[in-house]
Every structure is written in C-alpha cells, then in structure tokens.
Length: 443
Image (tube, rainbow, N blue to C red):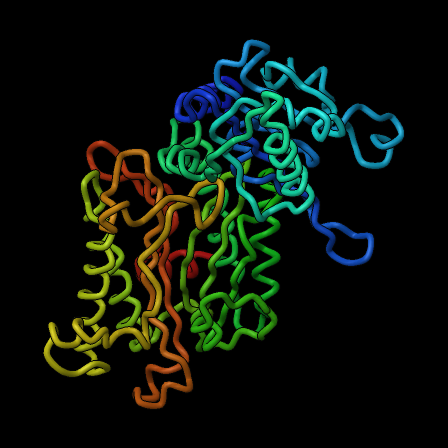
C-alpha cells in the first residue's frame, strides 16, 4: 500500500494558527528531538519530537523552530544542520538551511550553530516566551543566558520576556482535533496494524514462543512500509496477559492459553494502538468465553456512547457497570451492584482507564479535565481515542475460583469521533468469539 503523507500546506496552516494564538510581542522556541545513545556508540533509531514534527514535518535532529508573530523579516525561522559532504557520507543527506526555506516553506533558515548568536536578538522586545524548559539542558542554558543578558541591559533599552509559557498550552489543544489528512494517515496505520494482528492470529500454534508472534507482527509492519513501532509490542500468553505492560515476549505458548497482543505501527509519525485476545489452540474454553464476552459487551457499550458531547468519564462509568454486572453473574463479585460500583470492587480485575487520546503519540496529548473547574471534558468531532476495557485474573488472586485464574483479556480499538457519532478505524479486525475462531479455523 502507499504510505500516507501529511501535505506541506497543512504544516504551514498549523504554524499560522499557532502564531495567531501566540499574540503580539511573543516568541516561540520549539526544538527538535535529540539523538539517543543506546549503548557506547550505538544510537536508537531517531524519532522526531511530536510537537516539532507537527509544525514542520522535518525529521532531522539538531534543529530549532522559532515563531515570531508580525516579524518583518518573516514569522517562521528554522535553525538546522548545514550541508556537510563528509558528515553526509557517514550519516546520510541533510536538507540544509537553503533548501529548508524552499522545501519546508519557512521564511528564514540558518545553521544550527548560529542560534546562540541570534537568540538574544530574537528574544529582545518580547513579553511572552513560549518554551518548555526541562527537556534539553544545553538549550535551556542558552535561553536562560540570553534572558539574563537582556535583563542586565534594560537600561540600555533591552527588553526581556516577562512571561514564560509552555507551548503545550495552545499546541496540544490543536493536536487533539485531527484533520482529514491526519485521519487518513491514522487509518493507514490501523489498516497495516489490522493485517499484522490477523497474521499473528493465523500463525499462532501451541508450542510457539511469544517472540515468534512478535516477529510475524513486525514482518507485516515492515512489509507494508511501516518501519517503526508506535510502542513496544506486547505478546502475552496465559498469566502474562495479566501484566499490563508485559514486554519480555519470551514465554512458550501453552495449548490452553489465551494470547493477548497489544501492538501498533507508526505511519508518518502517527500511531495505531490495537489489542486482541484469542485462544492459542483456536477455540475458547467455556470459562474463557464467559470472561471474554463480559469485556466485549463493555467495549461495545462504550463505543455506542461515543459522539460529540459525550462526557469522557461517562465512558468509564459504563465500562465499570457492565463488567461489574458480568462478574456478578459469574459469582466472582458478590453483593449489590451499586455498592460494588461505589467501592470500586472491580479494581483488582480492571485497574486502568477505558482509553486515551491517539495521534502523534500513542498516549497522545490533550487535557482530560477542563480548567478551571476540573470537570471531565466532553468529546468533540475530530478527536481520536482508544476504547480498551480489560479483565485480569492472575494466578496469585487466590480469592477467585481457580478455573478463572491465569486469564488476561483486553480488547482495544481506535475510535474517531464524527459529527454524527463515531467511526471505528480498526473495525476490520475480528473481535467476536465466532469471528476469531473462524479466522483461526480457516487457517
């Protein structure tokens, strides 16, 4: 399949929107991510900072974006690595300042080493500085030194920023609502991830190791052009499925195990995040069916609620109510329903939320409570979130009948909020018992 790309005009529009939100007498400084050393002289694959990527589409390290509203020389400035034939021989091509202006539609571009010389002039005369301190020490020091210099020279007419605000204040609110291009990219990521999950389901046989299924997933990601994981894949069989962020993926799969796979690829920076749970032997046991149906009913009830105006917390309330009722029907929980909900009796078996925002980060940005009243947000068209209820009954939960223990189940889909309700981006991946068993039987 063709890899989706965010068009350059969208990055231009984002920068303009952010500049408008900043207001006059302000400057924003947004750095690229630094490279990360894995060990000795080996580095991790480079992943751009999501905020920087959102505003530029530029995927090189050692870069800084500066935004200054109404600046006569240009409102957008990029500092990046200069062209260097020797460095490029070893590390690959660089865009360079001259081509950055053309390709990224930036007003001005300079070599990254020029930043420390220009930062004083860029900050001079501004009231508001949009910058996130605490992420890059060297840049923090450069900006702090520049502010100190301006303050020391106020009698000579210099003006230092008096307010420092994190860019998150505006930028993350912008990122919460996805454009048509972002949605198309996320759909592509979901389609590839769906194929990878189906490949793993078809390949699964008792006696395999979890990492063999992990290999099937990553093979499908790479085969379709998704070179990066959105997060470390979870392939958890049996009791390992009760470990929420299990990542060892080295156990041998037993015939009676359920296999929980939580995996997603990244496309053009955007994440998919899908979980399915299926029987290693191809058929659910009666106990596995009973627990699985509770999780599936809770997820379906939650998805049916999703539409503009739906309260975020109401989704979790629905999940808890449905699953508490389900566990009562199996005598795993006993008592009055409202009393059990009031004391959160389900927490030993379901200890996380119903989901999270999804986008350039797998646990994407966005406030779940509104300021200043601290009330839960309501959903809006263009948001993308996960819905992922689960039940986890580990071997060591001896208060539960042994027949239920060693079972971890989670079902997760990616949901786009639309004007009329919602669209399940991962709807093509089977999740009913009948459909999962049919897929594995056909193989």
